[in-house]
Image 1 (cartoon, rainbow, N blue to C red):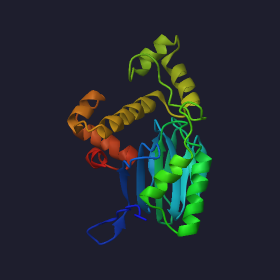
Image 2: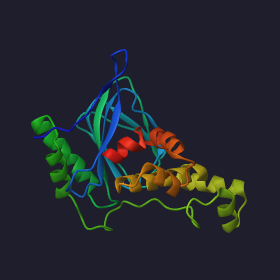
Image 3: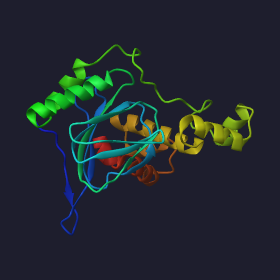
Image 4: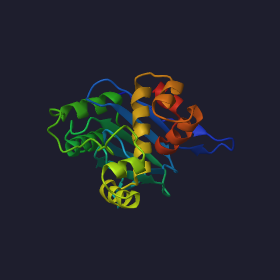
Length: 242
């Protein structure tokens, strides 16, 4: 079994800090994997275009999903459907976990997590081939599952809040209140996250960081880098290299 690479870098003082990394294995219908190890694994509110299946190997992973606190310990997992805003929290325990990002509705998420848990209990570990095999065992036809792609603000890509409100025949304030109630985040935060998810897609396709920044409406590479790292815990360059 080839173990999952879960890197930890060292600070100048010799203390380890968490490192997020993203990988693109072949097979199993997995778009990519995210691995993380450390104490401060908190990320702000964001969402993904893919379903996220988080499986914990050590420590406890804590989230706020659609406003509700959720957590999972060793040998447990959580399913976060595509388009659902969530944030991750730090904790007192160091965490080691893997995130599987898969097309919306492609996998029976509960069955994948149960399969990972059985394998982890039986062998004490997980490898690349284990993840892809177990995920592949629980694929179904696209479009038949409960997962849903994130909805759009409507109109042109990343429209301004004022323009979207006028199109809907509402005041800016009323539109923002209704949007936040429906999506869980205000319109400007949703639009930023959509741009960042588009950046993920382009980076996975091998586009240059400068081109991605321009194509997704960021001022420059530095602007994209700051927003990307805040949302996903890794720089665009490191993400692209995955």
